[in-house]
Amino acid sequence: MDDFELRLLTKEEVLKDTALEVFKSNDTVFATNTDLASLTGGTYVSALNGYYSLQPDLKNKKFYYVNGVFHNVYAADAYYRIESVRPVLHFVDSTAYRKNLFYDEDQISKLQFGEYPQYVLKEAANEVEIVNELNAKLMEQTLKKTGKKYCFYYGENDKQASIRYGIEYFYNGKKYMPFTAIVYDHALCNRCYLSIGEIDPSKIYWLKVEPITWIYDKDTDLFIAEKALVAGVGFGFIKEGDDFESTEMYEFLNTHMKRDIFPSEKDKSSLLDGSEHLKKYVYKNYGRKG
Figure 1 (cartoon, rainbow, N blue to C red):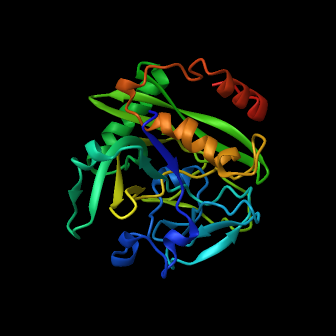
Figure 2: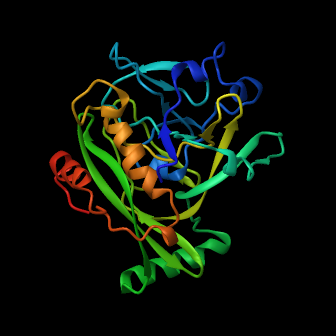
């Protein structure tokens, strides 16, 4: 896990004149919200194209997000949790991983690395039976847990955060996570949608755990998540300092998400993994146990 770091794109990396090469030549600056991003509070513009956060300018206390449809960069609030997270993967040495690159139909170079809950099962066609079986077995408490819990952030309001966990289950050779929507009461949040329609806050949705696809930019050796994976994370400071590493967002990316994208077969550590720093962080800042 120490051979890579997760971060966000910078404003310069998405602006037209200074964008990464992969953004200049392709339409990859778009980042569609996954269903999980919408369920965890991510706002959208249309057709599931969401806002996603950019790395802040902490020296000048400025925060930014990208409008997923128009590619415009806007000012954000440090505590807003409605912009989605589109992580950027940087390996210490990407040589071995570049051997697994592939090209899509538009000749964009991509990598599949790690996995994450992304899209809900549709209660139609061939998936309705799976949904019904999962719901029944969940009620009977007969579903097999993989031992993995995904960590998500949310807030009662913009400046107040907590942590919520999603439990991963194994069924018929595949992994799923049940989840109910996190709904924000915010002026910028209208109705939120999934790939199957408007969100029902009272409903349990089943998300498929699927490989994460990353877009490769060879000039910078960066791998940018093709989609906005999750929302609910702000930029509040959680320890002393004024750099990105001191923020809630960095802690989420490189403590929680960095661990969570590893497949559960390789993730047998306990939720708090014996790390005193992580224990203090969870208990002091959120007051909740996993």
